[in-house]
Amino acid sequence: MVKSFCCLIASFVLSIHFGFAQSITTVPVDSFTIDSKVLNEACKVYVYLPENYNSATEKYPVVYLLDGEYYSSYAADVSALLTQSQLAPACIIIGITSNNRQRDFSPALDEDSEQTQDTQFAGGADHFLSYLKNELIPDVDEKYRTISYRLLIGHSTGGLLAYYSLYKTPGLFHAILSIDGSTWWNKGKVGKEVIEYLSSHPDYKGKIFECRKDIHIPVRYPPNMELLTFLDKNRPVGLEYYYLELPNETHGTIVIPGIYYGLKGIFSTYSKEQN
Image 1: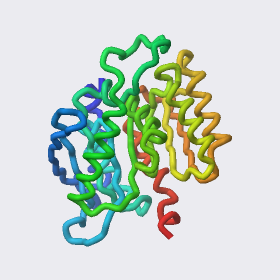
Image 2: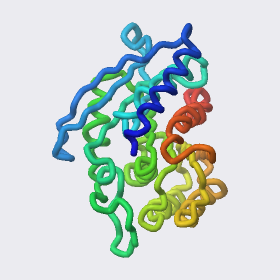
Image 3: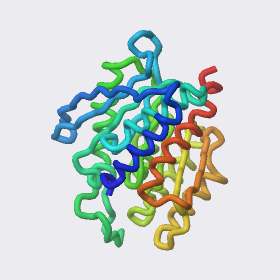
Image 4: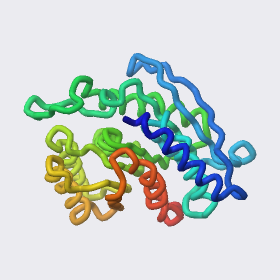
């Protein structure tokens, strides 16, 4: 389904380029491949550097984007536009690819999950987070001038993985952006474990930006609402939580505005954090 939105992404990016033709150009892309020992397969990585990266000595925050083979070019252009508009710092964009996103982005199912959708290859999230933590991120930090401020963006099952990372690899990402994340998965277990983790870590600091098409889909409503209510009313004081609903989008198209609003929102207090 992700592939079907490539044309939409391209047209959206072109509209940005024509609208700001005098002030912004397409961000060039670099790439490399990691022969992952954790995943036992080769993983391609896309890299978009800030405009003046090669003529500066500055270090940069890093945005890690799941489904990077489809969305990283768009995210890089959005990042450049926000930077130029002084709404976000210059960032390094890392487009993460997966050879099987359903396998890599979903935690293991419980026997009583009653899950009937996308179950054949599920359960590789722990391995994929290990790949990010122990292989990809150290490689990026070695190759490029980075600071420890990291943001993880995921859509659908990728949004589920973003939430899963919050308590499975605490501290690895300073902020997560979940776009129509599948937190209903496995009877909402990840959402429940997020609540348990944050409830037992009242000093937790970080950011969550959640963007959804519609929170009220019947089969997904209870687990999604349980997590949303906790984050809205009972989250730790040091956790910034942003929620945006875009009811006129589909599950597929929401990723486009979600990246823009998510980056803008997460970085809205960035300068204060650095002082």
